[in-house]
Image (cartoon, rainbow, N blue to C red; front, side):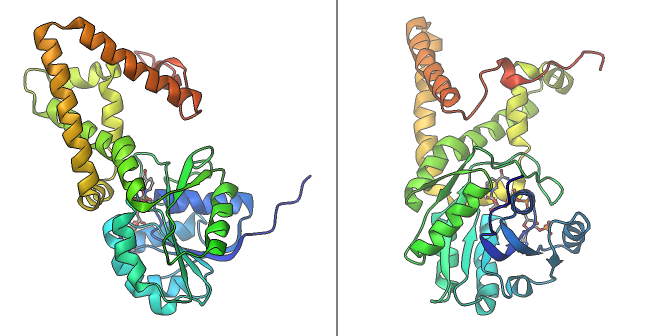
Length: 312
Ligand code: NAP
């Protein structure tokens, strides 16, 4: 049997104990990446659950207590809550510690957190491109980050040592790590995640408002495509509210382009321009092939789902 590698950190503290923190805690334990895990979440209920299911060795009633003595602190709260947490924990951070976060938007988190970080502490923002539509401490699983990207967006408050140690942690949890500038991150995410989520929310809203198709028909026939919109549109409302409020410029830029493209297709349909539609769909099909070739999804029909039995 091969021995586990030495832990990368002595004590890791999680502020926020939902999907991402619980998945990180489980992966850290499974791969022996830290000696001790502490945590804090807003509600007593989540704190009790985290202790009960063994996510953390110790859970504290305040964020400030949870970060005491930690050499890595990971902020896993909604983007809009990062600044107030940073202000609260700043006086309790250990000299030489690293603060990171997992927020889905990077420029707004850096603007809210960096001013609070003491000079002897490094701040290395991160964003794992992995998630599900579930939330809370029971929704995590250790393999969430396997073969998924984690983007680091170092700032002048990051040090090369803190950045490479955090990279080793994410690689230890199975992720592929890239570094990029925060503004570029926010634009890329507006294209690949934020705007698609908004479109899914909108499409589910349209079906909800449409009275000529009954709700039972929408549910019954949803496997024809709508089902995948509903999965995305079931994502956490607080998290996504904060994403749109804090990545406003990039999302509005991409939404503007989306609307222009939609009008191009709308016109082609109205004019019966089959060549335009066919050429457009041929180009988009190539993008799907690229995603499969990059190992980011399966080529199996219907995402590899086993068809549900009608009478099951
Ligand atoms: P989640 O499952 O909803 O968990 C959020 C956690 O934050 C909960 O434990 C909540 O505590 C805690 N919290 C909220 N406000 C707080 C405050 N003021 N003080 C202390 N704790 C607070 O969320 P998640 O999906 O893990 O997302 C966390 C972060 O990861 C977000 O910034 C999100 O943008 C980012 N992210 C999410 C995904 C995804 O797909 N879900 C993917 C990548 C990155 P209670 O349970 O007590 O309310």
